Image (tube, rainbow over all chains, first blue to last red; front, side, top):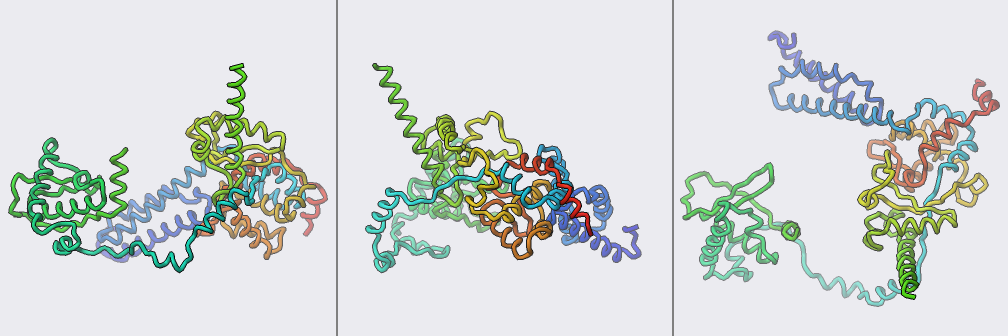
Length: 274
Length: 204
């Protein structure tokens, strides 16, 4: 009926409204902690299945997925509900509520005192702690001095040109192509067994500065066709493959930014130790 | 002679480890009291379960005990492995309970404590979470409205309860450490309602 040509638009509209209603029902059970068995999952699935062939645009498919996602949450809640009922702690909530309402405060407190074992903790200054604090205080320079000594300032990520790198002393202008050739030879050697090498294993070095330098040169190796990048987005792995001779770049080239920040480098270094 | 010397050395070894464990357990070093198993292992060595058991025996004389709260809260292990101990949090708690005469000593008003008990029992019976509104309605039956809010906020602040952004209330870390929930529920169900109270309630 829903799929018939006449009045298809209004049916689709109704189906959308139904999906919205399903989502709202599930949401209210989720957020209000209601009994998940109040929702008839089979019924909802049946409706979603029935409406599914009508969906043609992305928004409707997203709505369909959202509804399914909420139904999955309800199924999960139903599982937890059963698990809770099976635990030793489960007692009929109605009975508990009745007792709470009917027992006098004094009896409730007596019951609580029998099952309550408060934590014992100290919050007290010790002589050792005090002398440590005093030592720290006497060695602490005044704010006026500390604020003058700014070690570094954090800036946003920026691009860098070859001239900038030469100016900063990371590279000398004469040795650039020589360095590139050396790195290419190194890459071919590293990839001689498997034909490729992990990007971070290739650029990574003992110091962060050296790693940045190698990443910079490697980007030129790729741009000039000495090597190509292989990216596995699912495994989040990047490999670098050397070319036997610089390629002419017949295919379409794309720009692929790789962040070489300090944290990434530390992570790689730690991983290497393990 | 040599055996005696070794015995003394062993005693000194355990005494120093126990002292260290006492410092870690009693003094609050983070926002929460107690200490994680792995912290104990790092500070006193891998035989820390033995040190803790020795200290627990000593604390028995003072009516205190060391309570490990395991991650597997619903089903705590009978014979915990070292890995389970590492992940557990250890607290020092009272060994036996208070009596109603001690109430003044512990600084709680009787109605505040009753509200805490009712909240914990209600949340436990509802499977571990309730809407704040429902809990408020329950407490308002016996406590003035203005006090219910203050009480719930206090219970959340001190870690007995947790409130999320959707207004749902759960049991907090302090309840898990301090309250024997099963005993509480059983006692609550076992307690008979006095006929005078029942009669009073039934009157319109």
